[in-house]
Image (cartoon, rainbow, N blue to C red; front, side):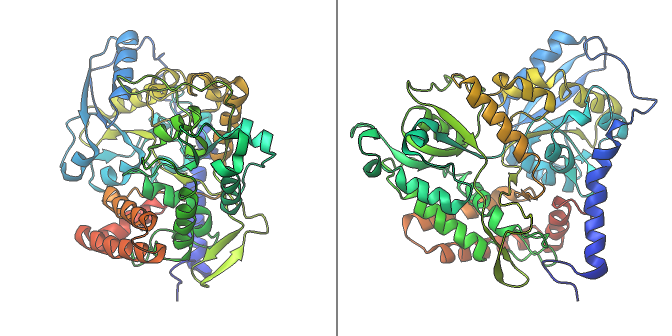
Length: 491
């Protein structure tokens, strides 16, 4: 009998082989250059008109349009869409679509996008080898097919007050348990003379718990607890689609989230990653979960870093133990099992060829050009939902990181991005059809636990019931197929 959580015998070997082949097919073979790849320079090629749909990112759409008009004689039409519209679309009236990473499953399962042709994947303009590892082998794949190019997909990282850590001789936390201990030492009461004036806001930690983010933060915290090396499933049992989010890894993560965010929080405001980051730069917080970005939304001013504040970056904390669902027990992360497990598809932007593209080859070449080594550095940094995603970009972090960071802090952020993108163990976030509804149920659970209306276990039990209902409404077998593909496998 095959276990629900960690296949044994031949089944397990087949699944492991499938993942290995899927991952290495891009990594090892990426140096090939097919004979029929276009050799034209992106700056001089003349191409037919291209229709581009951009989802939930007007700044990225504007950057694409600006660079295309400056460099090409081809006609470009940009249309803007909302992610919610994709759920009911029967076809895209576009040749190319740029969209949040989490929408990949919706687009693929609704047959709205097509796999990328080998010519596009290995186009010299795209420079596949230059793309960071997890971007290259995980974020752009659906099942065993390469469905997209990446414009950068940030993970949540720990941003901290390096000046306070130095003065208090605090070590940067490597586990969530250490994170809680450090947070306790950074309350206004414990800071003493180092605390801001009483009339100013102060929070030991600020985590992005606004609607649309609370559930994601919970998943990021739970990732190292739930990602056992013998398990493929973390969010659902991939054989039945029964949710796993009511289990011990998620209950522990939610209990710790509630404890940390109840420390010395002087403001009831719920933050996004952007506002969380700004609170630290303004001297109102000691640690936040966010990422660095130079992009600003229309009408906004860039954040400023207050005098005297030194900023540091680190990977999100990990865990010393991991839960084995099959054995229903916690086990230590020993024997080379890394403590840190990044959550993928937190934000990010991908680009795909529409299924009904008028000229699929030209559409794929367009994507290879604008996401390639040359153009992407001018386009992708204009989106707040992206970050560095190429080796070549790591040498110029100032194009991507917040204004006012010291060169040392910018280099530290680069090191964090590179390390996170190289982690052998990682957990994909929700990117199956209905992902927004599933995440909303987790938002509700987080808020219920924080307010004290429910225990963490009870709040997540209600989320499990909601997830079951969503799965039934969307079709259990269809969702099981989609979830299996989201893990990089074909059902």
